[in-house]
Image 1 (cartoon, rainbow, N blue to C red):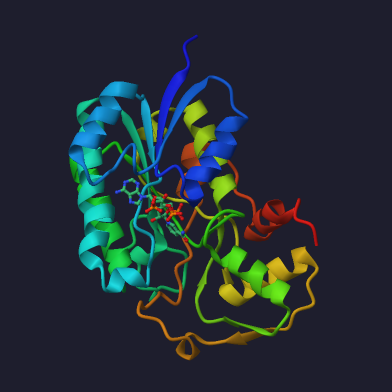
Image 2 (cartoon, rainbow, N blue to C red):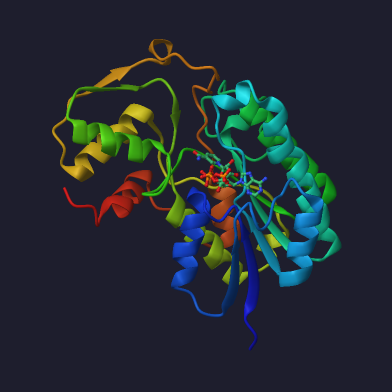
Length: 289
Ligand SMILES: NC(=O)c1ccc[n+]([C@@H]2O[C@H](COP(=O)([O-])OP(=O)(O)OC[C@H]3O[C@@H](n4cnc5c(N)ncnc54)[C@H](OP(=O)(O)O)[C@@H]3O)[C@@H](O)[C@H]2O)c1
């Protein structure tokens, strides 16, 4: 049987690296990992060339503009990368009959809800990053209704800039760490996400016909609760103090509650979710303390 051809874009980012780790242990795939220099999603020519040279059956788009704070002053760039470029990528995938997997964010919601957000909940992004990601969702699904769009929240791994790595650094310094306790959702372990996407793809390469789906580990926590779990796993004795968002200066407003309901993902993929605490333990299990 011939190998399935996969193109992973934005392959040096946090999620791109997680897909590298997952595919390193898989057989039956020929995977092309493309950085921005090779496959620039803001360049139609670069995308057309990449698709016609490699001829993927599936594109996993990990390319994005992810600086939530800077997006407030660079909304044009954010809209271009997260919005218009994603629409164009979807158009190209559709016209070449290539399956597209794309990732979006819980920041498309305003946080006014008190129960987990389902895929059908009304969107109302509070910041420029969320607006740019919503634009990408809309343009992609308009151009290609069978594209799979996976919304995720609070991505973490041992690679790149993320909350878990920030905490690890602060814990090493050993001084008191203050963390906000008034934003609730759940952290997403990049490796678990990538592994679940690959397992779903092995069962059904159409991903149940695509569309919007929410991926989240079971349970809800705050950034403070997330920090406590990291501290526990690392057996750190640093002092953690809960605080509120008002005490942190930030350009972007974030939703107070953005837990994503994960039932549709579990039903469509046939996969079971682990708890967010297990995902943190899994990520940190080989880290020396
Ligand atoms: N991180 C989170 O907490 C979070 C939460 C919810 C959703 N998401 C979504 O999850 C996905 C993966 O996020 P991540 O944390 O892995 O992001 P990341 O670490 O910032 O990686 C994004 C990658 O995309 C590349 N890129 C930027 N512009 C590009 C372009 N024009 N063409 C091709 N590649 C380009 C970046 O390259 P350079 O570094 O060279 O610019 C980087 O390697 C994104 O769709 C993001 O919006 C993330």
